[in-house]
Image (cartoon, rainbow over all chains, first blue to last red; front, side, top):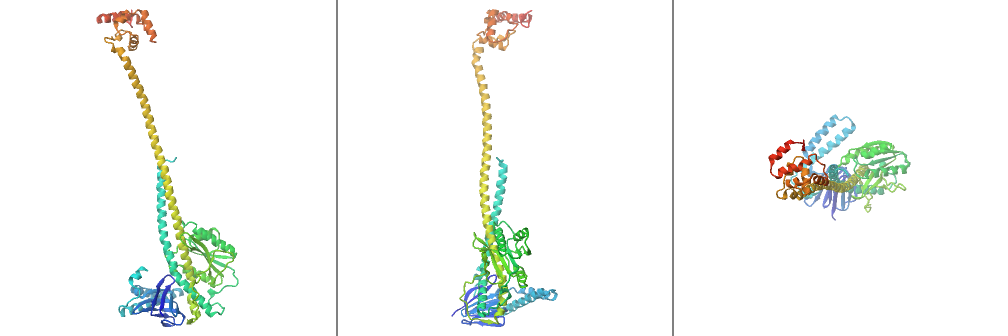
Length: 151
Length: 407
């Protein structure tokens, strides 16, 4: 039984529905591996990396919260925000981290501090993913580059 | 008829306007496509979120609402209407339609209203109508992210949760296709289907297509957490989608309006070109008429002159054509006119004149309609000298005459 995967954010379809062998979901309660015939589950997402595996190819996304609907033959990820791990901008993340740390120190209102914390978590996640990706060498991707461009 | 220069200026300005409207049309056409693509892109999330919400409600089936944003108030005292219009005009009846629909809806509800104006045109209309505007949002970028409109949804959510208002509606324009946009009022908060009796424009968010998904779910960590995660986001998404629908409608309304304007401009330019050509041709015709009239007048003068010359030519033989005609003006008292008169009477020679009696001369002159000259009695005598070629004698005789008369 194949497992179909789809990743959507509120603003766009991040990953068009495709067949996969396995999905690693960054659930709020911890990393969750989904294989075909998984029991129907609804769970919230935390900050983390979503990994979709098909054969020896994979696709990775940085996820910042959301909900995932798991059914025996289908996984739908409703992501608050999702960015391909391969397209992360390390320098921008560094800058964002510094800016967030600065506003965390100097922030006046609770609102500002909350936003800074979120921003910091995001930047840290992106940097962490980028580092891991760099050390793991080349990865065969599910989405080909030309397919990416046409989207 | 206006002068051709005025018409020419008008043609130029009409053509300029046509160019502008054509450019606006092209811009709007591309924006319609973009806005539409974004509505479609966010629809997947909306359907899924709606489906999950229904699943959870079915699964928990406790009857009690799981989230304050899902709770219907028993008594609706005050309502809030978020009116989505455009910042700019030139979009046909787009803004008028939605404003009128929203106002009709409010009348129908008959409850105190807090208005939230999104877009300058709606704000202006509400201000003119003296409505109660609690907030206004303008200059929202065209390629908006959800975060661009989250202040609007935060405001509405806060007003609803604090109990300030009990029902929140969004008045927006549903994009059907490029030619059809339908003003609609959507029941937004609480996130349950609203049914307003007798108001045909009421809409409800994402009607779920896939209801087969009712499964026995495991909820991690629990249904409430999932609801808490989804409901606020879904709330925002509904506003985002209605805004995008309105954007797509605005641009397609503008596209159609601008296309009509371009068509009108080219028609007007054609009509004005016709007027211009008519004026130009009339001017040319007038000029030709002037020239022809002048030429005819000139022709008449020339004809008359030619006639005169010809007449003179006809008479000429009588004067000088007879060989040996004498110059009668040598006789003192005979001028060129008198000479011509005598010539006409057949008297061309001095000898003839010399033989004429005074009586005969008077008769000839009389017939010619001329006045007698006082020198008349001496003409015969003078002519006698001339006829004989005695010019010295003639001169001596003339010297003795005073004004042609014998002294």
